[in-house]
Image (cartoon, rainbow, N blue to C red; front, side, top):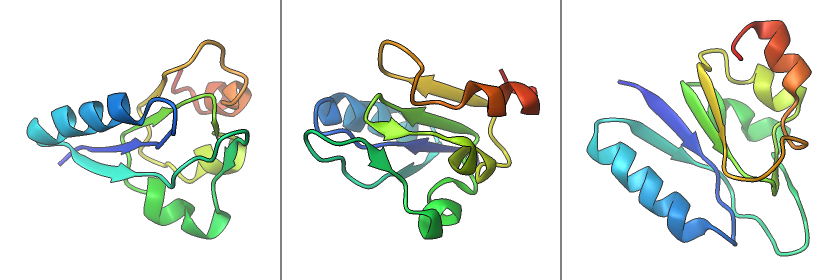
Length: 102
């Protein structure tokens, strides 16, 4: 069964909830991230990376969640990244290009 990590984001949570529900209806296992807080970017707890991202085929992030090299290395099955924001400064593109998934 395919798996998708869908972050949480206090600004666009209703949209992310809809996305997660639609994917779930199509047989995709959904793992949701921890909530974001106004005025801060979320740095994923390192000790939770395996549980959050370890089985994801696709990961959905926003500009309030940081997908640095450590986060991306925790996603060995990763086939795609979706960023629901303008810009890619919160995604470590060099890490992904090095893995040839872009």
